[in-house]
Length: 194
Image (cartoon, rainbow, N blue to C red; front, side, top):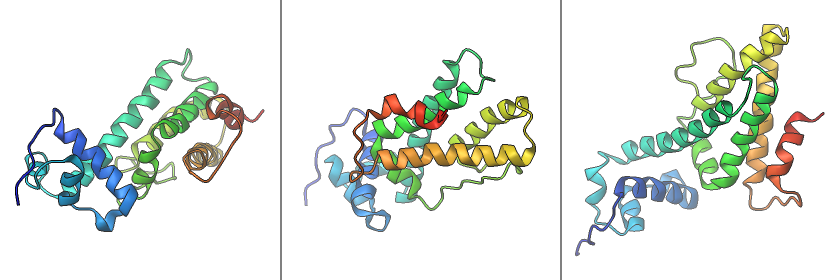
């Protein structure tokens, strides 16, 4: 068996993206470094220069998606004139949905991972919580406090907001769901629902 030539400028990211593609096509049980290296057209030994194991690659894949996702959400809040205005939540929600519309391969991968933890409670330090959900909570709490909401009402509102944007992202990335409007133009109307 001859090894394939190493011709990648950014093998690490190629392995990450190929791993995401592989999980989306075959599921986590079929995932292996050997299969990922084949998708990238490199030798079976090449991934080991970047990852110690398939678990290491899986962690890097999740971190890769979450990092991009967080950058999109953080940029959304930076573009808002007043971060304490309720319209900020609409912009974050729109960015949440559009991230997955533009990267549908990430939606299934990210939420199929058994290590993905989302704690909907306002209690707890949030250090092990899904970072985009924790970000939404951090942005929403001061806005909801400013609206005079009780703690219970704030928790309900955050769950409702997350369920709305996550549900929209879910249906917008499904191949068998069809919608005759442009998602980007309708997301704000659906979230805001005035």
